[in-house]
Length: 522
Ligand SMILES: Nc1ncnc2c1ncn2[C@@H]1O[C@H](COP(=O)(O)OP(=O)(O)OP(=O)(O)O)[C@@H](O)[C@H]1O
Image (cartoon, rainbow, N blue to C red; front, side, top):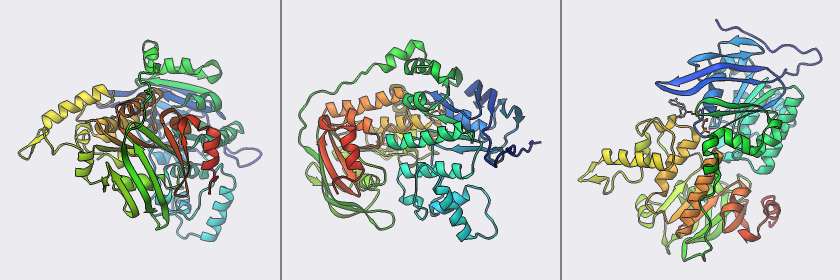
């Protein structure tokens, strides 16, 4: 029997009460693998509780077990001190638990408004659109950020989709809001806005917040309590006031490894950029609804140079990258690689050594049900030495996959596991191993550390710098200014489909870039 509860009524208003959540000795096994091992944490009512851990530490598994997406193998979940059998996300929602997933769950083909209404999980027999619209407008006026209610999800950038995910849950007025890396695709200013708003809601006792994050700054600035998972087990839990970023890092990776992972292994070598590898000339690209998304954009990237594209999400960066990698048609203009026309065909990518790391790699660069080894082989399974006489040498490809898994530290139950069973950060590492192989000469990269823990961020940044040091040209789209300032040689700002600013990274500041991102230069 599932105990049914309704939110306790409050004496003064119908404001939902922040909820008290405990997990008691929660364990989750997948076959013989223990993803979550005997974890007990407490989220106090009206607090923001951060959940930290390396990629694959079990954070998503823990929150999915809390919201009924996974059935725990052992242990229990207590809501306001009472044990509940949360058999499905629907039960969780009825208890007042809302979850914002790392992967987008918006329904394509439905507008923002329809997606918000659908979040309630039940459709009325008749929709009174006028009343619904008024309700949505009123809701929007209380939210920390705005989205056009009539836009389709396909028109939204990753950052805007992330905001829609959060809005969907806020619309349901949850008593506990669980967020899986809510700020990964937000600008630092947007992240502050969102987290500030969530903390204020929590401290006003409207809801409690449990959030997975990889950013120590967010933990220190916005969380009251923190729990750290390591290899599925609870490594530390307590008040943020008693922690430092160093103590959190040590808890995440264990004392013995903490020095090794924070050490910076890659250094930018001083070098003059070489010949132009990628030349984009007056490129026009259409957005999903036929609007101009990239307008007469010209840009070149030289060998041995990282050119960063900054911009608020939704200003044409996504469409530009899709057009460059052949996932979106080009309306006008020219793209050359090594001085020759480039249409991103498979043979061209191979010959000119062009590789790409798209955002949301599980959806955009992988085939989810296929194994890690098969996904790692997608670029090369039909070429020598991996294929001969029409036969693919899967044994050799699996062996190479095992070597990459070790080299890139991909946490997987093996090269035969379906790639969709990996944690987000480990999918990213697996794709990176594939794309950096064979001495890539041009790398087209979008938000490469989306969802990665601090050790993985350092490693991937290091690998991009190493590629640049050995002469690769890198075009890097990022919504994270700190990432661009750390990696790029040159930074351009994109706004409304155009480049409005072009500056040597050494001369750029957060302030000046932010001004152009906000509309200066039009
Ligand atoms: N459905 C599943 N089947 C098999 N193994 C799984 C499944 N879901 C997760 N795992 C494994 O459990 C471990 C923990 O994964 P989880 O997604 O909880 O990590 P995480 O801490 O959220 O990582 P990240 O920061 O990368 O998102 C990983 O090794 C993962 O491969």
